[in-house]
Length: 276
Length: 299
Image (cartoon, rainbow over all chains, first blue to last red):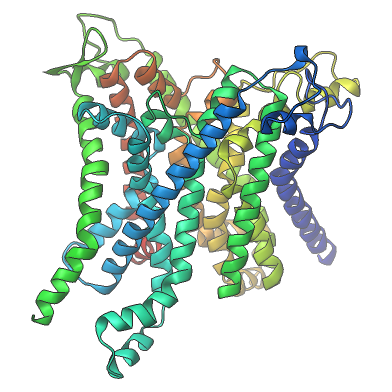
């Protein structure tokens, strides 16, 4: 019995090891092979190079002209810039709106509150392709020109949900006695909100904003439908590259994106654990 | 100003603008899509404003007799998408469930670290995570190269552009969605009940079926639903890992909008995806107790 038990426990631990290997080995593989100099077969190692990174970043490279699959660095930078503009705007709007709703539903009791709460979950649960085409039909029918503006509006519809959920969770865990104490000690409602509620709520708001920013930077499906012809975002750019064919440059871009988001996410989660 | 009125004004300021925004840009588009799904497709890509139920008919079996015979290809794609999404749920569960038990019994520090490692990929680009699997699975990919160089196979296997590749890709990107709810109920599992069951003579297998599985069922159902919903209408994964061979609902909808320009039919397909989602949510709310539903919504 004892042996069977420890055997079971051992296999469970081994399984969990495999679980993490499944998640991370592919990412390690891509990181390693992004330095492979083989321009034709990316998975056959022929030597170390940083050429692909230089290529993506627009530096002069020694890659022979025949091996080049030049993707315009200018276009890539434009796509990154578009993504940043969109993510910054949507994060601002969604954070203000999502926080307002969370506070409203937390502090006030009113008819239909439960229903409102359910409605707030809908944009997040809605399959993205459904929301994407619904927005496309809507914008085209109402004669709004597809572009940055429509992408920002479209992404906000579901990002508000995410901010709402994160801020709500923070509100639910908050100590209400502090508010009462502040009111008892003579602070008016606004002062109490500014000096007591808001500081406690801030980690939730920052967390929600960070989540919104990351999801906005990564959104492909909804953006893909409502971007129109002039605007390309980073995920759309990579998606288009992938559809045209796999090239070593994509590898380099992918690894740079992985590194960037790992750093941002780790920082965010670290700060959150510190604040607790 | 009386307090009641003041509170009402505050509430209106907090909820008013957002409600308006969501009514116009979320509920509005969905309503228009619903209307469009009942309109006739125009000859050159637009819509004609007549009631036309045959968009759904093309899928469900009463196609417009003027133009075509009923072709079961669309219902076949629908069933196939449901099948692939269901297999994704099952595979994700098999991947996550045992690991959840192992992680739930770690010390606080290691537990948090493991949860961090599992959520981290969620923050990285979806398309990058799928691209990695293209490099691994394709004809000249990592797996084939390794198998070829060791001489285990003579010519590359068809790994990519299959149903299996799609399921693998979806499991990979949806792991956090399945893991978190499952882990939530595994961690709350009352181990004294398990011990009691074992002490009273039930074998390990019987204890699993009668005690552990029912107690962790809410997490399993929750995870299954939030994996199934995005899996059913997914179009990025089939587009990248399915090639042109595997058609799923998501690709079909995209095609109707961007290539065939039959918006009413595309809307009808999207309505099908949406109704499956709403149905699943209703079932979930109905099955889980009122308190359970509240907890799920308030989380």
